[in-house]
Image (cartoon, rainbow, N blue to C red; front, side, top):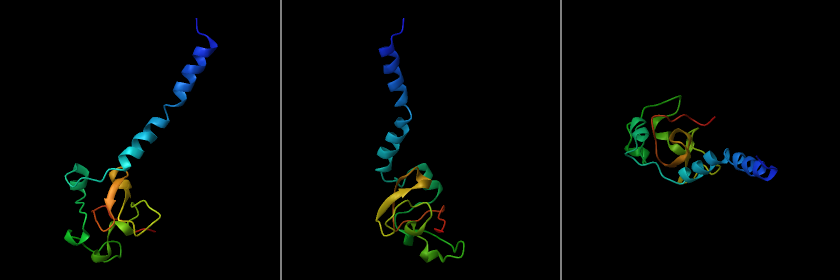
Length: 106
């Protein structure tokens, strides 16, 4: 037979389930994207954009394309050295870096 106290304990435990993914995202966001990561390789990510073979894209000169002015670079401080990138599951990328997924901020 189930008691009211047992029911409340189970309900409280179930209420915490939606918070589990949020906790794992915050710990994941603190890690830098390794250059040997499969996603980094696929998008040709580099921490120094001057080392990348880039082409003009969407009306922006190749030399002006860096993570700091990309739509996926998530930070309020545009001059931040490292910030989360949406393309890399919110892991940290270098501000002066570049990848093939670069899109200008609108």
